[in-house]
Image (cartoon, rainbow, N blue to C red; front, side):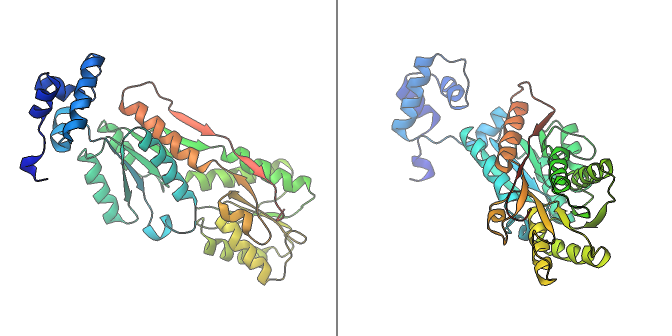
Length: 334
């Protein structure tokens, strides 16, 4: 069908027996039109195969029906076998599909990418913005909030500039370290996450606080949540503290890397060294040995972020902070 042949708003109005303005209100989601008239318009739309002009509707309603999910990471990281990012994307997609909204996925793993994302979002091409994996005190969430664009973060932003959804990092790590202490482990090390992210900061704080309360010294190496960094950090820990007998890694991928290094060093898991991760991605159940880990509800994070943002965008009451629980999952590695 050519553009000239496409049914118009006027044709729908004639078929429904109402005014063009009434059809426009129904198509744009108004609830002020009587239900029987709405039904007549919907029936005419279906019979004629009318498709709204989205560009024109955006001019009228100031809505795009699109939500951006921004990830300040390289594509290779987002689409790796780290299932945290795909899990968040899935949760966001499910909620947006239920709300009949479009997801716009934007990666900002470089300065140029960050600038492009800022221009696009400030240009109001989307109705709201979700952030995942913020590093440092990224100014963009606060910039959007000051511009009146609804924004929600996965994880607490360092400057507390916008509402956020997070998990109980401190409680989850405390349970993991306490479990190791109760099992009689005396030299418990950690492979911490990046210290420019709240998740990395809080998981390290939970480890330090729990060990300090038990009178044990911290043994720390820092990674970046990747498998390779976990393997390298484990080598550092073994060089510095060859008598260590347990490791808490702040992500499952880093724990997987640590398992590989321990195996290469001839250390048996869990006999010589117990290992616990954080996330409970699918891979955790299939490592050798299967990984004890702190489970966070990854898909639910995406869903809660989206619900919160949609409430903000429609002027409904919303929570400034949502904290989801974590759970210690015991497997053979500890």
